[in-house]
Image (cartoon, rainbow, N blue to C red):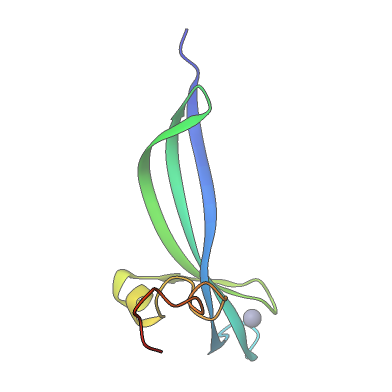
Length: 92
Ligand SMILES: [Zn+2]
């Protein structure tokens, strides 16, 4: 018997200041990547669906980000502290 299923894991890539179209408040928005995995015996083995969303921290409204919008939103870890750690030899 093989145990299998689907798992959706959200990952916060970063944050940015933006104007929310739902609540009309300019504030921080989270850039969230959701990946749906096929899992076998509770181990994720194959990503089958990837989606990027911009989530308002004020009203939790979600806006879908296309690939180009995701690139324009900034690098992963932007404004969350991960990008604050410079790689060796990197000039900031
Ligand atoms: Zn909002």
